Length: 269
Image 1 (cartoon, rainbow, N blue to C red):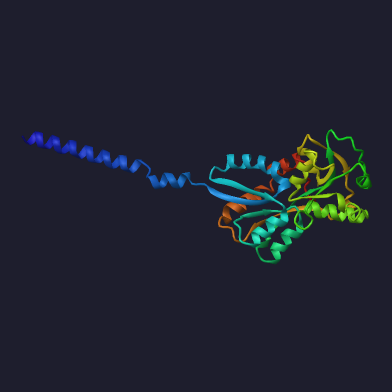
Image 2 (cartoon, rainbow, N blue to C red; image 1 turned 120 degrees about the horizontal axis):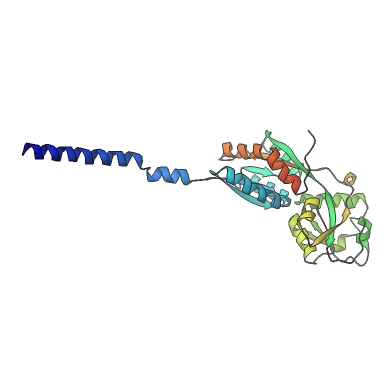
């Protein structure tokens, strides 16, 4: 009888001990869910960066499994206003220095956490199958050119650069009746691609992304301000650590090589 009691006691002890070990080795649901959670980093970026950042996103997320990149593409002026109005953003990548400076002046971006990242060029594109001869800005005044697409100068940097170039060439007033304005540079590109405009002012990098357009004119860079793309960390970010890591990554050779692949240039340091 004593032997049976002793045997049952041993078996009970082994069972309890096994259950304790099982409980210690099995991760809790809360631990699993915490491991599965990703930090979402939101980047407000100029529309002209869409393709390059799409490739960079794939590269970055594959190496940083805990981060999900969300891009808010648009005209730099519109993105600036969104940040001023409190829209969630961790990083701002603008197509014009003035938009970044405005946010620095309003203390929404720290001057110590922003840097010129890229440069670009302004070009005039025409439909790839188009037959209208355009080889200079003056040719835009010809009767065969009915519509000229341009970004809204007040909010689209490419439109503002184009306005300054046309003003320098004394053509701005002459072309007012032909102007079709786009909400960002990609819409301008689309107008030309679809034949809704005979010509359009876009960045060199935009022209390179499309087989439906051809570059007709490379605009004289002396007629408009240097096109710089600064990047900065938004002070209101709730993911400062992750934002800084991505901010640094975009300045790495790996990321810069992707930008160069898409036609951007790197500013001299």
